[in-house]
Image (cartoon, rainbow, N blue to C red; front, top):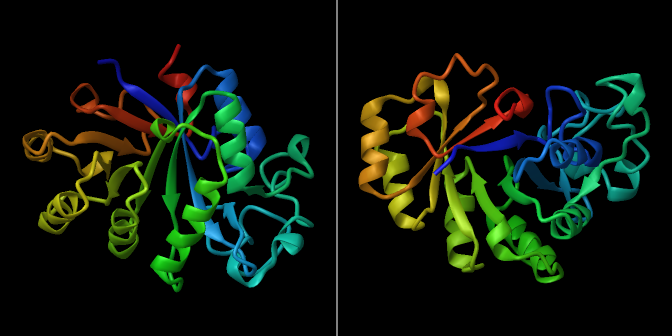
Length: 236
């Protein structure tokens, strides 16, 4: 099976991360997979944003969950990357799912929480998924939070789950079993052959982040997928 190359936050190396224009670029490049980050606003709308504050990737300030969707929609999420992307708006999960459905694009949704209640955020995800016509086979759900992964498993959404961590350890291996994970997503810098063998014994798909140099990942041929800010470097 050929290596899956997933666009990290769309095509974050050249476009403003987690925006529709970045995701459209992934589609233009011919990618089948993207990865994006999901978290709630103050008024419980799930939006696509990595940081828990908007300071780095917009012209605004403050936490995402302390701002309403209407307030977030007043911000520019593109110009920080380049002036050609000026006025790029924040993307809602609802709009993302519609785009992926209409364009047959598969998406790994990484659920972000810090002070949030995991079960509440998963209930918001359930709501948006129930309203979407997207094929569940196009979706993969992951999180660094074990509580989110347990909540996703309990919700029984009929969607593949990916356990996310920095380096493989016994805690992650137990979580893989607990949630019957389809995949395990790890930092490529810490992956070794022992980790690969342990995951293969569990028949878990192995995906690694964030691989931007084709020559830097020595175990690339031993994994199933990579996330990259520059996916075009791997698809030429």
